Image 1 (cartoon, rainbow, N blue to C red):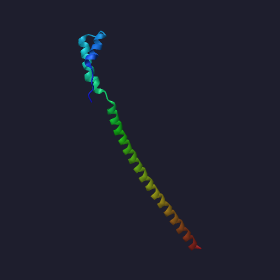
Image 2: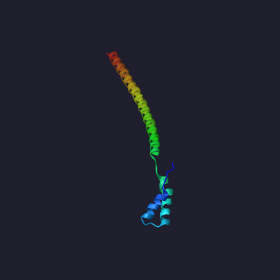
Image 3: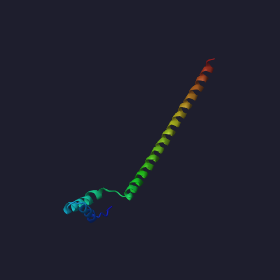
Image 4: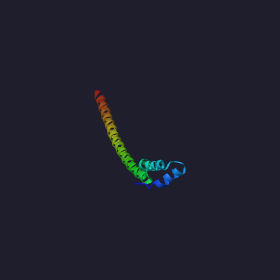
Length: 100
């Protein structure tokens, strides 16, 4: 975004403060060419904030999906362990009753 920079007013203020006219003009042009191009506006900041908000939301959604998937996997594994344990216990009890 282009900024309006009053190089004439800037150099006039420098001249009024005792800076030589050619130096004041050179300083004003340098400020316009080098400093003003590096400034950001509120709209620039809002645009970056909006982009970061979207990325954060996407990351949060990805993380939640991963957590949900892992929770389901753990539940299935734990269920498998419980079923196997109960089956083993029933088989062991049946085997012990046959030995009598």
